[in-house]
Length: 357
Image (cartoon, rainbow, N blue to C red; front, side, top):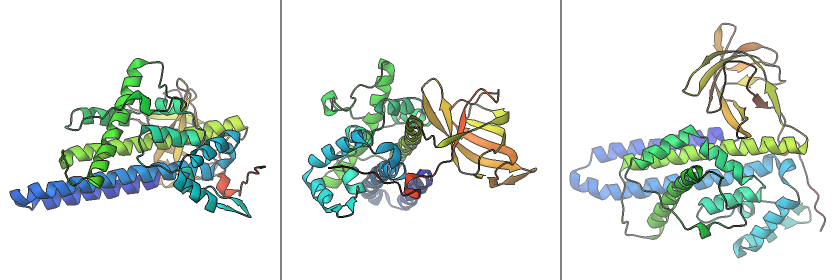
């Protein structure tokens, strides 16, 4: 799913930071103070736009590409309930009905104003994803934890909302571990900070707090890591749903040997590609986390075959994969579970669902 798009969008944000720093360095002290307000506003809006656009597109892609595993009684109940609660969405919904049937669009499925924790839960609940698993992905992300620590050491504070802001019917409980709950609250607290900053610069001329580029850069990196966690979570949910549906979309890969395993999320695996499709540099594999019952992303960062660096490992060929993952790869090659997604998407097979009214 949308990994490359996330990378490209974040590179654009990074370019904005670099450009703003160049401009600030060439300004006089009096002009620099004035321009900092513009920098603050521009970056906050860009980062929030990345966040909202990415999440909505990700949710809709999950529905569109894997509707076979999502569409059902629970999905339609959630969908029609959300449509009824918003007059603007109801109008969009009515326009989506024709003699050919009902078209579920990104506007009607993923509508929201401020995409905070409550709305995020609602969107994933709408496509029948397990919210408890979302917390597991958040809690096991080393990259996200590193950014939380950076934010704690920055000038940007988290913003906490009252518990009643979360619907009790939307799996409001977090986990059974109070320490994990506090950490997840902190993650969403920093997301609230971005949303409050965005609302302030979008709706108020007076900005009470202007953050420097370094602080805003940490906030942007945090949002990138949170988006990556959601990407991993969605992949894991689709895999689990396909297994429950009886049509697994994954095939296990059997490494012959682990050449290297480091604490920096990197491993090199000797592998025979027994799938019916090539393994390409940049492909996303999934590593099953037995303890948590979730699938962690494992990205192919490099391939070697025939004594040279190659871009793809063809079916039934042997080579070495450089893997980056936060999952656990053990030295014993047969003690972990690595998978490749091999089944086509619903959107590629013209899947349709009949609804009797």
